[in-house]
Image 1 (cartoon, helix red, strand yellow):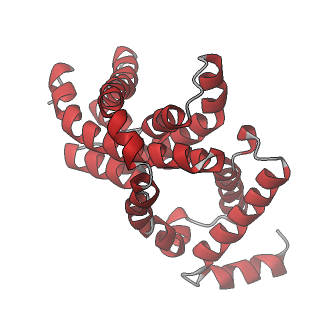
Image 2 (cartoon, one colour; image 1 turned 180 degrees about the vertical axis):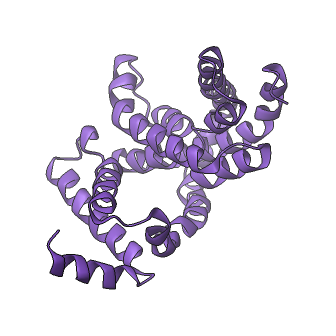
Image 3 (cartoon, one colour; image 1 turned 45 degrees about the horizontal axis):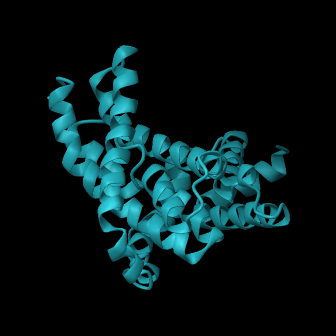
Length: 241
């Protein structure tokens, strides 16, 4: 960066709202690209935004904490946004009742697979206890995942990175995986994406249909609850207590 531009950036970085402003502008730009590409999964706006923000912070030498002081407003809204997903789900209440037992079976299978595969592979590779605990809630939405990790002695910052990475990968690949498996029902597709790829996957599901988004939100919420209940048991099974 030129000296003048660097001086301007140093001045602006003192504002706590800079992180929020930059985040919103970058995301709008990423979403514009996503829309122009006819919502192609490989151009997920969250993935583009994360890459752009990391590059920007690296080039400007801005500490993450300085950025987060402003961007934390977006972080705070994750909770209310998750609760608001109950509204479209209510419109699918009739269908939800008819699919209740299959969805609960899928939830149990999905939660156990997400936790067990991540922790099991990392354990075999010799990962530390803190890393194993941080890996387990990777398929749960960020506020819940970080809370679980913090309470059990893991690394919340590592969990946050893993959650975002899991969500992006899930949102990008879900369409191809479900198409390959010939899963056509929007509610089933949405629930699977919500369990595996939490909020980012749910946002992608809403772009497909309101039904898919509603069931994705349900999957995301229930997986958070299931993980919080099952994780202590798996810690005991893996001898991490």
